[in-house]
Length: 349
Image (cartoon, rainbow, N blue to C red; front, side, top):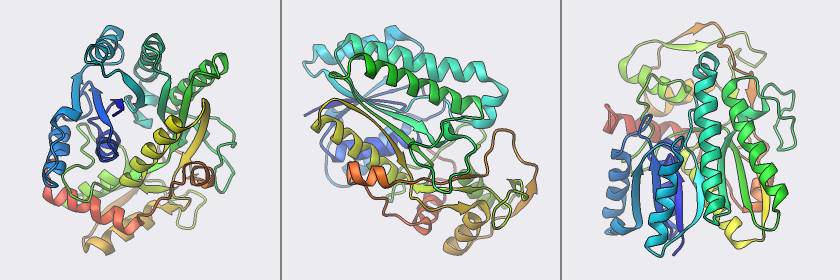
């Protein structure tokens, strides 16, 4: 049974991916600083399996710490080796992800996202662990005229968050080019994950003020307080930004497919878009949410935010072809699962 290190595994995307890893027969070690996540998400993962009468106690280990601390990362790899269960691969989620915060505090983002990733990758190399799935982002593309963004589209981030993701991608590319016969690397550029696990036991749980549109919609619906929609003058069908929203479980499944592919094939580096290939505007999303959940989402228009782009929609044909991965869940299911999570967990974890 292979052991996988999941950085940021207590977070939104990380926790859902942990469920899929365990379902696929992997053992996992989770690293998380808990600065933007909650340890209770891991307890809830255990609850998901207990409901299926499956005990995962010995298959999920947690280590609290920060990737900025290289000695901490070293200690996790050493503990696994002492147990004669060395870490076979890494799924790297850990990092800060707010576009607006990155504009205000770029140094914080470069330290956490780039220096932290450097420490992780260096430790991997020192421990002969050369398989990594990296959580990148569609923000590396910036403003583009492409109706559907391909992996070959120009990389031109327009905010510090996107720049840090691009920097880690460049590091992984440089590393692969020096030792092409050793490294197995998947760079997943995903779009806008929303929704929650169908059990409603885990979901998105922002500890700080949320920046992403979906938790803002949920909070507006639940509290009946106005949501700010940033800009109604974008060149789209209704004046609001268009994004490619993907169900969190489809995204998590993409990581498992990428990991399985790397382990089963020869050394290589692949860049893949993980999105549905379909765009929805902010107003489209609000209207769908209202219709599916029979609830009102009050909103007002506000000025555009610095660092935002008009449209980001994936061309996902490469991921479908290489991984045999297909996003199956609809925008309606995303809205339903996300609202169910909120209704059953109004205060989060």
